[in-house]
View 1 (cartoon, rainbow, N blue to C red):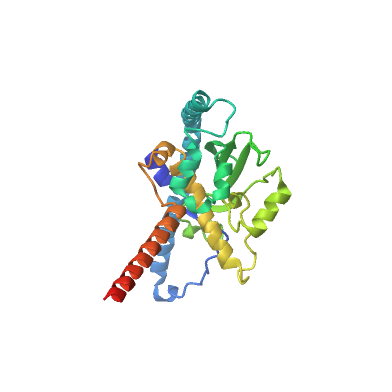
View 2: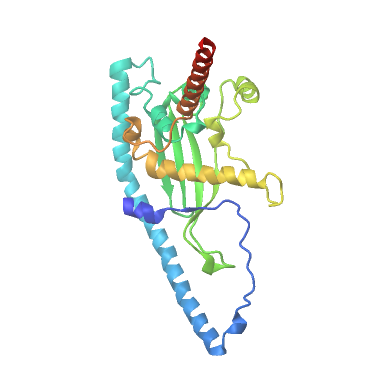
Length: 293
């Protein structure tokens, strides 16, 4: 399926301004016979596009047909983690899993989204799954499953990504494969909503859980916030596809550290602090030596 996944990789496109369709000014350089030939060649090219659209649809249908088999494997993985928790920590501590399996997986993959406060909540993660939908709309869900916890009543938090697999009817020749064009989050039912809001306003400028409330892109591309929000959504789409294709199936080797696609932001901060401390120490030593002399 890896080859299919590579072929299936969707381009990221969220609310980008439509490509400017300029009228052809080069036609005047072609003779009537040449124009006729070019028209025939474009018709053939359109046939290849139609084949690519059909292929894309078949790939998603095939991937969907294998989803049940993958789910059986992932269910076994969850059972192993649950059994470890029960054997080593007992049912009284449902948030411990090898330990904190999924928290460690996320920290080894996209840690810049995880604050220290988020970590406490993500310790309650029991599973992460991807769900595919190919009819009537091509989309996929990223599901974050949680043990009962003190933070929110949801047992599952979901993020949905929508894909467009059809050419633009106004400019079909510009088709270049499937595109992620929209995402939707979910409402988190915080048990202490007021406390959470106060924390958000004062202490926590960014949070992993912002992932479930993506910003809305302004309809006007001249809006001063358009570029910033569009950039956030581009990263959001990349993260969703990355979780689906890489993190979920390869979770165990992210956990063990055999694979890591990015460094922990906390590690980077620590390294920076250590470097600054070393520099300060060196400066003090030089200063001291200079005084002795």
